[in-house]
Image 1 (cartoon, rainbow, N blue to C red):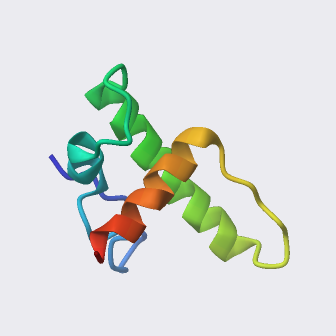
Image 2: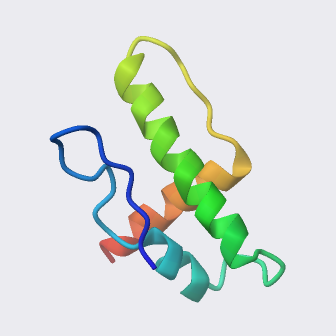
Length: 77
């Protein structure tokens, strides 16, 4: 299941299925549930919107957002 947050009349923020990629990743602990991944993905998308909205601010992701961030790097390998 691929959840994407859409802005009105705009493309989805993330176009790859990070949740599925995280499920298959060897770096994600077995204790992380599908609900945890869905929550992390949702928070990741909101974090991207914050970065876009406040480009002059330094924002630091939490651990679960960082986990999803690293899945993007694997999407292109």
